[in-house]
Structures are given as structure tokens and as C-alpha cells.
Image 1 (spheres, rainbow, N blue to C red):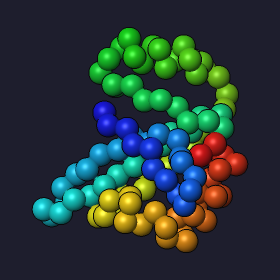
Image 2: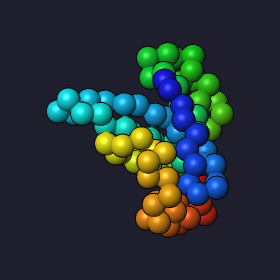
Image 3: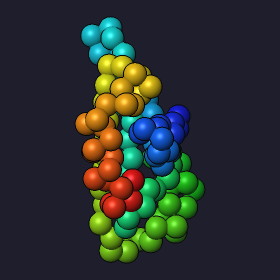
Image 4: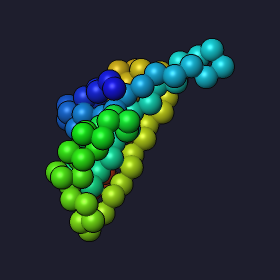
Length: 99
């Protein structure tokens, strides 16, 4: 799994899971965050039981907490749109939720 720590203006965001896929022969960049109880979670290999149990131990097996999934997809790398006002506004609104 690849991690990326994107910038929005001068603010560094929490590390995101990052992938590049091909769609119709063109790149599709995807950044993904999972927030639990107001903070970003780390991801584990879904086929590795030791890592999955480590996540369960860290975040609780049935602990209550809000969850939020944030995904940004683009046919351009992050650096090409990091200064867009829409991105700044979106992540400004996500900041109180843990991102």
C-alpha cells in the first residue's frame, strides 16, 4: 500500500492511502482517508489477520464513534490542483471532523 501526504495550500493533510489506476488508458489518481472518532485511522492489509487484529485492538472491537470515508479522485496528480479554492474549502470543512 502506498501512502501520500498531500498539501492543501500550506497545510499538510494526514497521510492518505494512494493509488493510481488506469481508466480507458488514462491515469486515475485516488486518495482515500478513513476517519474514526475524529481522527484518521491507519490501514492494514485486508488479507493479513495480524494487522487486522492490531487495528481492532487499537480502535476497539465495538467501540462507538463516528466514521467518515473521504475519497478524492482525479485524472491529474495532486500537485496540479492543490491550489484550487474548492479543495481548500472542502478540506477546511473536513478539519473539524479529523482531517
